[in-house]
Length: 243
Image 1 (cartoon, one colour):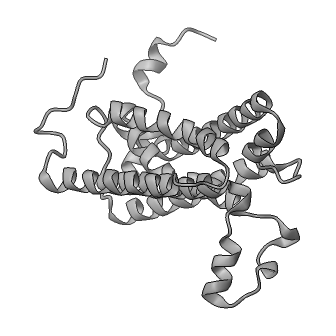
Image 2 (cartoon, rainbow, N blue to C red):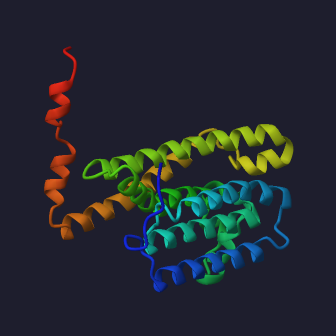
């Protein structure tokens, strides 16, 4: 059973907790603002059900597995983007209009076939923004090192992305009607779930690739740790039953 990390080992300093307070307060304000008159209230409630569950988990584990300030910032960015999608409904986020106002480009030039791609962007951000915090969990909880500290976060990103697609499908079947269709957000694409998972995988690969490059450059024992992570332990080999 996990025990709370002591003050001597936890990042228990004023700057760390001040950073958490700013992020938590900012997310609270953003949620309240975007929760005022959302385009589809029932869809907003469905979209925020998982957010509420995620926040409860984060509150439960932060004393036991404290993230770095970078990881908390990445989590904040992802949840903030999700709140934008929840406010408008993912398939109706007017990012094309925003882009037109910024650049002068016509909205029709931005969406191939007229599809709203905001949901695909968020699935990409799921992998890109959350792969690093997930890696921190594996580093602290499972003491993953070397190869496994990159493979396991990618594996969990893919599996949770697939799990979300199943939850999304189940919720859409349960509520039915236009609300179910709005929540599912396939926009007529029969391969929507597979493409969403692919985007999450791509985002995670890029994030972990950047982490790999940084550690390869600055971590002194990187090569040794990588090699050790792929070595078969002699103790296990000696005690293994015969084939």
